Image (cartoon, rainbow over all chains, first blue to last red; front, side):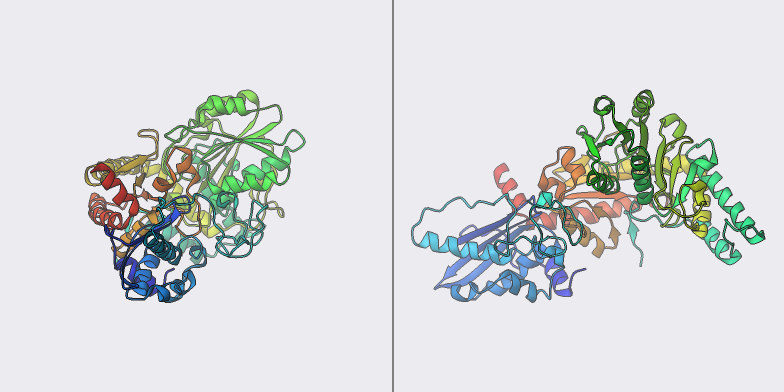
Length: 170
Length: 393
C-alpha cells in the first residue's frame, strides 16, 4: 500500500520529539479526522536550524511529518515557505489517494509554525494554538470525496462516484 | 514465512479436512445439482448432505430452511431486502441497532432511499441492546427487526432470545446477523426464536465465498437473486458446489470441536487480557466482560492510532486488525466504538485481536512482547501522549 520511502520514514522517523525552547509551534488536524501533527521550529539568522515533530496518526501521517522535518531543516524561512503538502507527498513517492487529504498535513503544520514564529517576533500576543474540529476544504471552496478524490456534492450524503458516506466528513 | 495470525475474523485458514473435501469435489467433477441425470443426481446428493450438515450446526429443524449463497453479506442483504420487498404492502418500518455491520447499515441505507423508515436502538457501554428498547421501537407498520448476534468489532453477544420473544409476540419478522457467531459459539435457531439468521463459512474454517441464510418455514421473503428454482426457489443461480461441500464438512467439524474450540479460545482470551492489563498502561478492553465471543479481544490503546500499530506488528510477522478510521478503506472512526462511548482518539487506537484453534499461548506471549515495544515507540511520537504525561507530572 505504501511506497518504500513512506515505510522507511514510518519505521525510522527522523527528528521526533517535543522542542521545549521552540521559536515557533504549528498544530494541525484533530482526532476526528484521525491525524494530529505538531511541528516545532528553531530559527537562527532566518534559517530553520532545527525542526521536530510529534504526530498522532497513521503510517502516512508519521512519514509525512518525518520527511517534512528533513525537507525543512537547514532551509531559510523563505525557502521553507515554498514547501507544500503536494511537494511532501512527491518526496514520499506518492501517498494512497484516501490519505492525501487526511494525513498529508505536514506542510500546513510547518506554515503554521512559521506564522507563529513571525507572530512571536513581532510581539503579537500568541494565541493558544487551536485545532479545528471541523472538516476543512484543502482545495479551497470545493469539497472532494476523501475516499476517491472526486469532487463531491456537499448536499449529498453519499459520494456519487464511489458510494461512500460523506455525512461524517461535514 | 511464519506469520502469527491474530486476525482470524478476516480470514480463517481452511482446515485440512475441509481442503481435502474441496480437492475431492474438484476431482470428482460433480455435475449441476439441477440436472436430471446421474451426474446431476450425484451433485444433488452432495448438496443435500451439506445442507443437513449445516442445518445441524444451527439446529435448524428442516434442512430446506438453510439456503446457500455467496457470503454473509449476501445473506444479510437477502434477509433484509427480501423481507422489505415482500412485506412492503404491510409497512415500511424496520428496527435495528446502532452497532450493526456495514452489510446491515448499507442495506438499510439503500432501503431508506426507497422510502423505508429505520429506527436504530442504542446500546449500553458494553455494546448490549436493551430488549425493551426494541419492543418500544416496534410500531404498527414494523415489518422487520434486524439485530446482530455478536458484534464483529467488540465481540459482545446480544440478548437475541429475549428479542425473539418480543418479535414473536408482536408478529414481526426477526433477522439476526450471526456471521461472527455461527461455528464459534453454539447457535440454536429454534431456541433463539429468529426467523432469519445469516452466517458465513469462512468464520468456521470453511472457504470464503460461501454464505448461508436460515429461513424459518413460512417467513414471507422474496429472493434477492431471481432466476432458476435453486435453493428452494429462494436463491437462483447454479450452486457453488465445491465450496458448499467444503462448508458442510467445516460445519460438521465445528459441531464436533465446538467445546474444544471454545475452551481453547477462552484460555487464550484470559491470557491475552491479563497480559495487556499488566504490560500496557492506559488501555481500555472493549465489549462485555462475559457475554462476548471467546475468540475476540478488542483493546483501545490510548494516545496512538491503530494503523501504525498494525504496520509495525506486520513488520514482526504478526497479523492483527484495527478499527481505526485510517485503516484502508474507511476514513471514519468506528460507529461501534463511538456508540459504546469511546472518544474519537481512543476509537482510532483500537485493535481487534481474533485467534483460533491453531494459535498457541506462545503466540499470545510473542504478540504481547512485540506490542509493548510498538506501543511505546508510537507513544513517544504522539502529541497526545506527551501532553498526558505532562499533565500527570
